[in-house]
Image 1: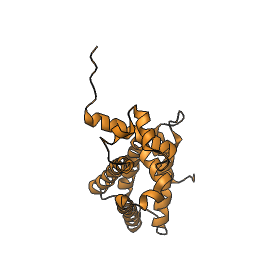
Image 2: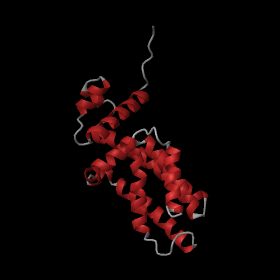
Image 3: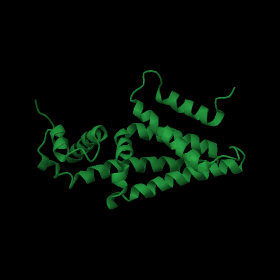
Image 4: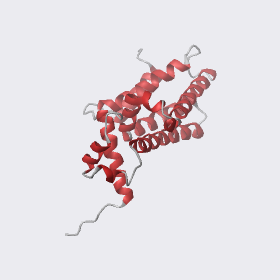
Amino acid sequence: MVTQSKSPSERRAHLVRLAGDLFAEKGFRATTVREIADAAGILSGSLYHHFDSKESIGDEILSAFLEDVLAGYREAVRDTPDPRTAIEQIVRSSTANLSRHRAALTMLQNDWNYFSGQPRFAYLRTTMKEIEQTWIELLERGKQTGQFRADLDTRLTYRLLRDILWLPTSWRSSATWSTDQIIDGLLRLLFDGIRA
């Protein structure tokens, strides 16, 4: 039986997935290059054929995640002038991206202080600022158009919603609720509240 070996790009993607799983499980700083290589079944030195450092792997994971998140935000803002519709679109795209990039989200949650202090990861602060600004602008526009309450604290609302959006990804797979049910529940809670 002839076995086809993986192409360099497939091998690289496989190593990134393995490393991401380890970073999410153990933490970025606690995971060693040796552990990544062991999980891949290769020697530590072989890992350096694909990446110059552990930080390069982390960079690839985080930048891919944030590029996807920002693409969803930018598309939502570009596609609709209506703040509520744009927020709904952002919630849906964010949830899909967070589900696809669980390792990156866990890395950010667990090792934010490390990453944000490294010059290589300076883009994290810039990206997070753009995400925050998008939310605040949409919430402010909704206040101005009368869609949202006039007394809404937009910065506080953004922080609460951001953290709520990140929570379901830590629930793992839920046998009780599908991802769509969770999103719909969040949007109903956000826009309709719990009052009868």
